[in-house]
Length: 243
Ligand SMILES: Nc1ncnc2c1ncn2[C@@H]1O[C@H](COP(=O)(O)OP(=O)(O)O)[C@@H](O)[C@H]1O
Ligand SMILES: [Mg+2]
Image (tube, rainbow, N blue to C red; front, side, top):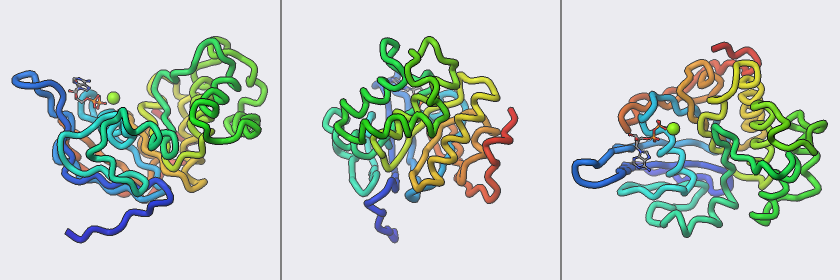
């Protein structure tokens, strides 16, 4: 196979022959089967598929949260295939920003403190930039509010500010609009779209075709297989997404 080098500076991704199972014996679940995917630095990629098709597993493999049984995983120029997730803390801190369906904010910390916590924890990013980050996600006036005082969409915007605070190469977002209504989901999609326009890669898992249509690329999964991988010549502007 003609292997092209992966750009090591930003968040390029190469998956080759990746297989991932959970459990053993008759209970074995094949979550990823023979997955080959190449993602260039700075692409906005949607991973689309039914529940149980392996989307989250793929994202967790890319983010160094899950190991693989076989195959090659190269992310941001690093081959992480043989490395146990417990040893990949530094890799995750330096390269990856995570956004989850249920936001995962710390309830006892304000919006601003939630972002600050990741800067403290990772030793990456700059505390002085937090007001700027919150402004970028439209939350300057909510910086001192606690998660419970924010709407779902606002909480997800805090989570995006948090994911960006460490200046990662790659943002991995698992169903980021899954628990939001259409209007707030659209704001979150717009932010993800803007994130890549600033040169950062985004891989977003969704089971919603309308949301996935904002991406430059759409990878379809079924039963652990990548069944289609299509360039989207006409990404929808997030502001006009309807579902
Ligand atoms: N920790 C786990 N232990 C056992 N099975 C799992 C685990 N995580 C995921 N699975 C199984 O792997 C398959 C793929 O799951 P997942 O990647 O979460 O799919 P999706 O995100 O597309 O819903 C499913 O059959 C799921 O039940
Ligand atoms: Mg999932």
